[in-house]
Image 1 (tube, rainbow, N blue to C red):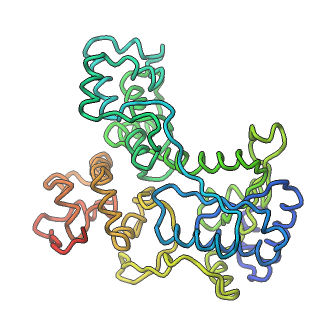
Image 2: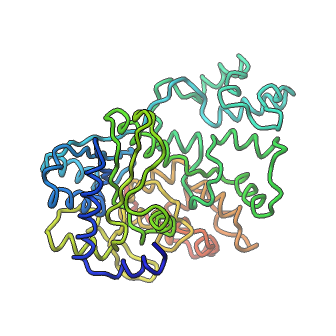
Length: 421
């Protein structure tokens, strides 16, 4: 399919799109021995699940429904997902993050070990020939005994069996800020630090070097998506022998998803999975040509239940009142460079959660990004006030990265004493 053909398909009426989805779902069930559906508790995956329930009721009892519970889901969607699982009598499985297989050090502890080895002139023992870190484990094993005692006393350790939570990911890899184009290195932060300081294999591309300069100042990473979502879901798929996964993805959502659909189609074979021992694993996206309007039209036509999250509203930058459009992880700020981003909406709809995320480190990294991406040479509020002071300030300076908030004058700042604790 070509771009113009996709545009034509997206403009077709809902009846056509339902018929197309039914055809694709039927073909998928014919191929699958153990089909599963990726369910988020959001409106899109709910409609996909209803399509199966409504038009293929004979398959519903054997359909495995996998809910990715990252631990930082919107509470409205968690509650909704579990309710639907009971009411629709689904074969429902929650995919949760795993736990560490060995003890380790928190990032601040790793930095202390790293610096000690540098100061002692023994950093070379944990480096590869090109200056990259052999492994995080190699660094931690090189920790001098006296420093190990000190770090354990200061509780800069992760015990064996620690939940690889959102907070663990933020500590070990970085905070989910900016889009995937900014997350080229899926390595632990201490490995990136080592690469930036010692590696002789860095690119000479000016754009990539500019990216490295940002990394030197800000601890950002997208790896939490793999740790919290992808790996747990695939672990459940392997345990249950799944050979096909239905997803409620739509080409309208992003250029990446549109390209994925244009190159792969509705039903395609994915990478090999060990648990299938050579048999193919399939991905199916029956709603690829649907739009958000189609989803809501379907919900209204068939009176499909949906999460109360979508009834919540916020005030947009243009002053209008809008409903939340998408669910996801509470602490995700990968769209922070755009107006009305997820973090800005979260501050209005789930202020407690927003404050926890900001106080635990997100605020500091937004500050670092503002400095790294400095849009103007003049001083900003980030240069005058602490994170804690700015968290309670109105208007909020953490809502974007284009400099609007950061370049407010100190006298424009208003503190809200009625902040929800």
